[in-house]
Length: 255
Ligand code: ATP
Ligand code: MG
Image (cartoon, rainbow, N blue to C red; front, side, top):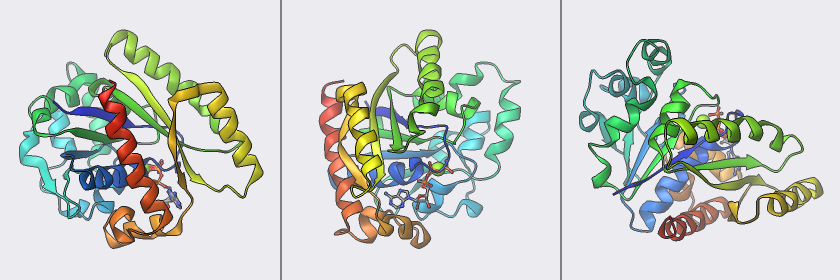
């Protein structure tokens, strides 16, 4: 059975999508069967996987509102993982879901059909604590939180942690925080080193060992429709995400 993880942080632009896409590709390189679900109407994880969001015949939107079967909506990315894609249509799901029964658990129900086919399911969440993110959290075993080591990084974390606690208490008792992933890290910046040390002091082994450096190759890759991990395999960012894949493979053994 697949282990299912949300990549979440309601702060925008912190590296959720970059982490989702590159972890997916990294896990494939470690021989894992992976499904990547794009739960953001921006559709960046879809495009970054080389799947054109405008030409999707069926997207995660149809699956959530119950007018399409999940299997019919899957697309194979060039990097060797499956994608359940998203586009602008998904923004409408937020409104429509409010009137649907069991609106928080639509994704969880849909995933039951395919979870035996994968080792990992990764869910790229939008930058909000919306009903879409809630669907991700209800479907997942754990949350991976990418964050930049900046002064205000911890502030938004409280809201996310409280939401995770609420979902754990009311909707999904198996949900836990798997770890905090330090991303876009620049070791030359003293403040980043300090925040990084504070994170480890405060959260202990909830902080992943792997650190993702700031690396322009990772930022360039999406415009070529390929994960950074494959775009330039020798780039520091690519190597770090492959390492992170190995760390995740180890971590799930303990779950
Ligand atoms: P949103 O909240 O809008 O969904 P996000 O949290 O998914 O954003 P990304 O889209 O992954 O964040 O990253 C934001 C920007 O930072 C992008 O332009 C991305 O290419 C760039 N970026 C992400 N990680 C790195 C990195 N390690 N090094 C350099 N650039 C990065
Ligand atoms: Mg994103």
